[in-house]
Length: 189
Length: 189
Image (cartoon, rainbow over all chains, first blue to last red; front, side):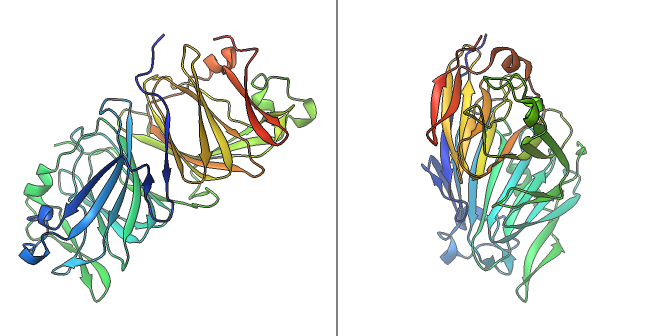
């Protein structure tokens, strides 16, 4: 008879704004942290601007556990390219992820190691399934914050390096207020 | 370089009523299916009454994948014991689960194999973490449907038999309209 390592616990999610109460772990990414991720360099004067925040419910990073988090991406662009998360593969490549969008309008941009792209819509109520093997990045294409709740296996881990080196095969750019998907000329997958 | 077995896809969740569109897989449980689960036998004339429905987003049941679903429990009691799900351990005992409640008022009743109980509140916005090793049952203690969205590892599997044989260490009963937690005199853990 096994004794569980963790006791049950509850967090409260604001289903409109995405806040988690209590806030257990917060990561902020500035445009400075995103240097090299956009198609053009981030201007010096924008380096301290926060692009997105991730509020996470931590658990031990072992097989069987789950992590969940709320991500909020501020609206805006860098030289026409919409604000977005860095994007990553899972270090354990086969780990899936589920995204539930609470507010805003976005595009979930995914890619396989072989460079096959996939794009799914994000808006309040969409449940996106990111299968194992797909790098994933969320892009805010709306006028307000893009807010989504994510659940994924706690042992998934992050491989940011592949995306930092290769980029995604596509970019999401602002074409007269509408998102347009373009091939990424700098993609090196 | 691995080729993913699944392509990304999107389902739309009604964040008020819980419906999943498209509806991919639906399981209905009647009171007849719950015979032996409540403290008293279910009366014959109520056997066809639907107690809860689970609408699931299926994926292959292998390590790395995730399942998500919406469960709707109708309000009511059986001889004073609130409507509830059967409850189960995961067959892979260490698999966790995350519940996000969308509507109603509930209690998430959990228990370890050793018979330690835990009870967490469920109401719109609560995110309950069910760690591996905890059997879990949700109980509708409100006047309307209890609706929650759940995410769990696709390889978790179900062990219903242990609960069918042992019960949970506690019951949730209606005491003048308020939920009361009582020791289960029939618990055989």
